Image (cartoon, rainbow, N blue to C red; front, side, top):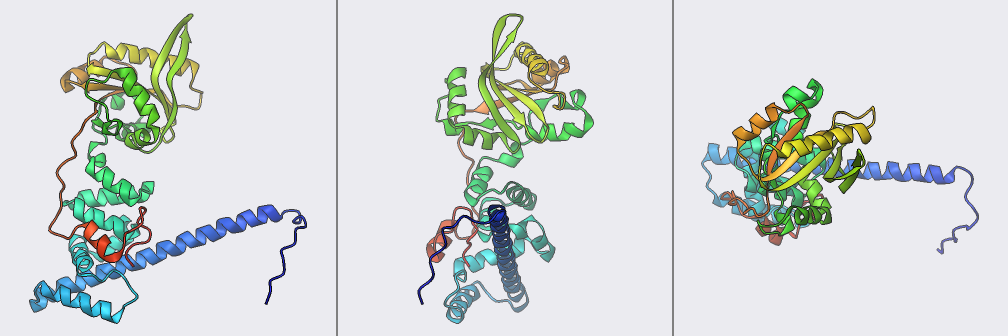
Length: 353
């Protein structure tokens, strides 16, 4: 039967808005359905892993039972992926890492299976796995981004900058501001040598702004580089200016290609005053300063900040940082599972189902 051609007459009044609303509802329904499927899949894998553990402990079954189970399940469900020996071993490890079924109601249960493979293979400590799972859900990290964040110890570096926020910021903002800064910052994606000059680093950071923002963390919005300010007829230029969407304040970042010196804070403080008087609105919070230097003496930094009346932080940056040794467990590699099951999508949303 031939379909009738779509009429080219103009749509009735209000049709475009109705269609847009329908598209939004359809996309939302698709996302909810995908999340529901993922939750069921992760729950199934946890239950299979728990059963394997219980049978091995109660019946004394050895490791070979996993290989036999893989063969039998693949025979029974030839159209389903996910029942390779390697993936069954991950299911067992998954249940062993999270013995309480209640974990499925938390961030871990909301993550695609591919993300959970990364958590199991790259991290050994339960608290770390839980922290990275929570961040991955909160910020929508793809599997590749999650792996990169783990390799660069993103969560462990948060809140480590030397600051005076406790004394210089109002109580509700203190903790969030502290957690918004880290130490050290890793700029190895710039591919610059340790002798790079400040302007060279600035230009490279702006050129790689997406990776720079990812390294800074959630909430930072880029305003500009070498931002011009006129004070008393003289011209001044801020290295890098950002706005933090959660703190609702401007963040001035100054780069120093050498070791921290107390006098560096004088220049940074001047820029904070200028931004507060010329740029920020009455609805913005106090401007925060972040001084990035090649190295610092922590005690000297703490002393210097103690004499400063404005909210500032001091952190180091690394241009060349060797990645830490892989904390690979005795489990099969993720790559091995991908070869057996077909590559997982970058966002992990398709899993090996």
